[in-house]
Amino acid sequence: GAGVSQSPSNKVTEKGKDVELRCDPISGHTALYWYRQSLGQGLEFLIYFQGNSAPDKSGLPSDRFSAERTGGSVSTLTIQRTQQEDSAVYLCASSSRGQGDTEAFFGQGTRLTVV
Amino acid sequence: ELKVEQNPLFLSMQEGKNYTIYCNYSTTSDRLYWYRQDPGKSLESLFVLLSNGAVKQEGRLMASLDTKARLSTLHITAAVHDLSATYFCAVQTSGTYKYIFGTGTRLKVLA
Image (cartoon, rainbow over all chains, first blue to last red; front, side, top):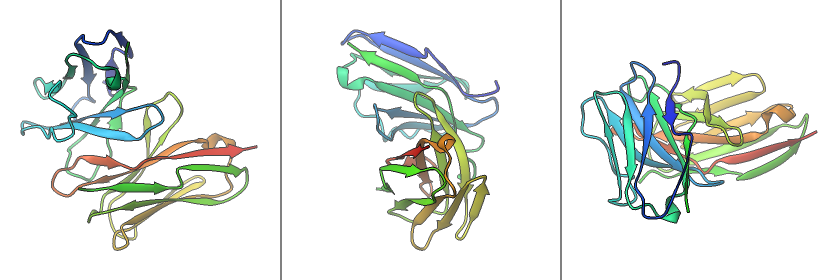
């Protein structure tokens, strides 16, 4: 596609429910990133996929968070048993090689509200 | 652990004035990126700096990188209202390639 696509754009869920957020990266990009941005804050790294390598999960805040990337393309971020502190904008980004010489391109984000 | 700090966090300036935003990082890296974020929007790439002494300019914005000092600057010349946004720098860690973002600088240009 022309850009990084994320869905849904907004999600309101009840505390304790599971949610799935989807990211469709730019076609041909091998690296995919998930970040979280709380209101008025910076970007918190969550997880990084590069090609067929094992993902870097070092930023996932708890075992309620998981992500997968199928076929080296679309990625899903799953949050189980959501808590109010999970409310944030979840941003996905992709880059062409992930080798440190290109910028990451960001999607529009999914705004998650846990009530 | 790589830490990236920006200052100032908030900047209110008059149109026509010049100012500089600073981005300091804690470990060796020669890959630094600047992004812009408008309220309620996603991040837009502004500059990619990949070597010591790199300088990039676009319109009223100029970015530079000093890897020895672990410092990048984003200089604003003759600010205009349209530059009002939050600016983030991001550094890539050697070997892992994840982008670590600074705290952001919220810029407001007053007419």
